[in-house]
Amino acid sequence: MEKAVWNVLFNKADDICQPRDLSDTVFAASVGAALVTEEGNIYKGVNLDTACSLGFCAERNAIGSMVTAGESQISKLVAVRNGQVILPCGVCRELLMQLDERNKDMEVLVKLEGYETKRLSQLLPDYWR
Image (cartoon, one colour):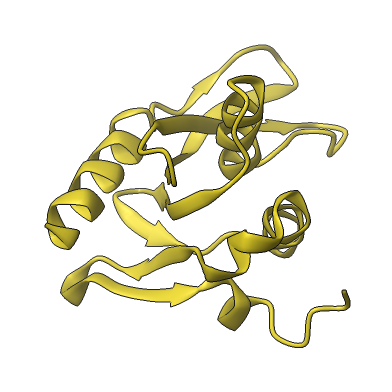
């Protein structure tokens, strides 16, 4: 069952990766993210890269959708670029941790082969709070 969930999340994140220019200064969707909450709902997001560095990550886009729907506790998260799993950046890790204290136990897919995961607390050790 666990592998099936990771496959669904990976595929949802990979499917929304459709890199494209939105304007002369904004490039979108080179990264896709999907997360599943403790309630079992799935949220997705893509990144936005901007010329002035005010863009945001796919993970934060998915988190925004989740928060808009009234949830904050995440069970699993995956981010994908070019068909490969990538790890959330430091800003995303920090937001995930601050958003809900229980997120420290969420799983992040770090490698699709073998479905290798790490807890957020492992990716953000010695958290300041």
